[in-house]
View (tube, helix red, strand yellow):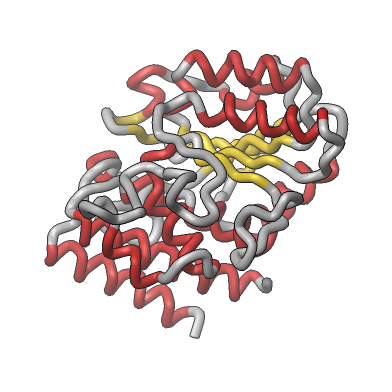
Length: 277
């Protein structure tokens, strides 16, 4: 896809995020919106996947370690054709397959159930090691939050990945600088994130703008070409990206817009869409 097509698609993904969270009256829009461009690039450009065959053996795998941003993953999967976009309004509703956190038993395209912070990267390491042991050539991607990496299990998994030289593993940290209680540096600073991953024998890529598709493309190309060690992409992003009143605001980590706010948010995204027309 061209950058313009990716930008258009990411904007549709953001519309789906806001629509789903508004309909649910609950959810996590901020970190879903900050990662929308990463989600879009992974599912529309980077990964070897087929919506018509979600379980194909040689597909690349994705584990959403920060599982609370399921609205972002769901909107991406829906726009990619795994299930109807119209189903996004059933998010968190009783009887819906679109639960508050991803469930691999019920959602087409979800490779791992997740939500307990810190655990997704461990699962991704296991999947990557399994590929190595069975001589399979698929790649494994996992997306973490910068607040999530305050969990000790993240660093146990990273030590394992570096020791096992899992060069088929790509860890992405959505570094939007905010978590539920405020700035990550104030809550419990994880900085410098890059040096920590380097200490665990990762190849580290500092993606200084996680909303620039040229830079995103270059980062994932570099990750694919890295041999002998896992890669960590530190993706510097803007929480709430695309919605004026959510951008850079920790208050929108985990709450839904009301009807008036929803109208403003969709107007913001529609204005962006017109730029790509």
